[in-house]
Length: 483
Length: 136
Image 1 (tube, chains in turn purple, yellow):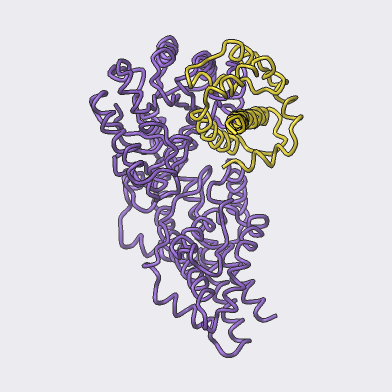
Image 2: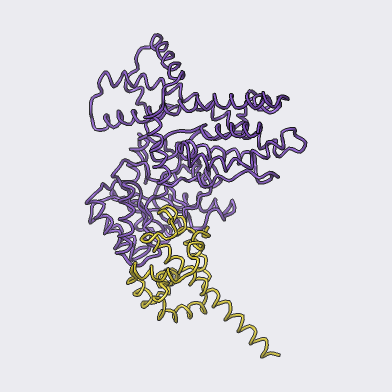
């Protein structure tokens, strides 16, 4: 019974820790590093685990974790409120509205509160991850006095996370599972005797999961009761006001702000983690980019260019280097209606390649692209969308070659369907359900050329088609050049 | 003795080429089922999951396509008559066009395939959801 209390408390910590709110995508947090492992947390773990008095151990552990949970919970509500309000003011600026003094004062306050909340959030995250790492370590250490307890915890973590997803704070669970997965990777679970649980279901949350999580967060913010932590933050703010004068709106809307940027602004640059990965899910609502893979194939690529020209819209081609070398005419053409990007050398399945194979498919593809096009590509799309995990070898090499990785959120499935009308109907359905993003076509099939024209006309009638790199610029708040 | 060896080799040839084409056929049926899932999501897959499965299938089909040999092409040519019955024309057309050996009848039939046809073909395959979910 006593040990059950301990485990329940740990479950609660798992449930409420380390969440970061966002509307439509899980915010990328700093990856867990074994080296970050704090001495303080090691001591906490040992203290909580080794108290000879079982009754005290149980009570102390539960109280400790409950306190962490409370702090974290409130911190996250504040982060959510901040993000929501920052979006409103950012959008005001985007449409050219003047900010009032009240706007500025309100945001000076919220910005400061956010900083405090963010600090709580990060601290709790690392404490919780350290405890999980230590649990894994002791579960795998023969002769450890905590081995039995830790084995039990490891065996139950996944169950707790799944239960928490059903009942609790869904945004938290998505981020939590992603961070727990990082710990598994750091720990090297391949070799471990006690296998760590898999959190795959949360690593790439679906749109439906994200929407559900956002709804839940919104409800929690509206319904939570004020606590002593709010008072603490209010008092801190009063102190802060005495020390510093109000900041200008430029400062809090600064896109280089290191701890928080408006949700509408993505931190996008070539990087092996989420910051180097574009899906289109966070583009401004109503805006779409057209993309075409696998060419150039003289006839069909020309067909796509004709469709873009006739409709006066922009598209981005992701070409295989082997085809660029073979059919250089269109790739050599610089046009305001299309951009040129890389789609490997031979369309090989990258996770199955050796390091020399990867070098050819990414680095050599980029070099040979430049020989024909005149400059290196700044965007890359993995064949079959298979880029391996974040921070893995493939994504690292793409970033090293100074390219963003571009995914998509509307797959027309045009390669496997030769009926242009059904391709169009399928695309339309996805477009209307998402409202923004990146459409994937292929410029090597005749049916795709016909379906592209239909999709473009539909998009033009209801939405806006914009150049992909312009939408990236809009998302990240600064220029992004592409050939 | 010579006759036995020739017979054995011939059998082996026939078995392997048929197996190759059969494999492409089953992949083509899976492809059809995936397309049908957009309209009739009997396997409860999101469009994002369908896209992921489609990419995995694409890779498998490309692998098979590069390995097609003369025997397979002959078998595929014979299937032009029946591919519309199991909705495999699209993928046969894809494979043949990729290998620059298009067959007009297959391409034409593929272009005429309707969603209703796809759903009907999908309903004829057992354990389709498990097969789709197993795609990696």
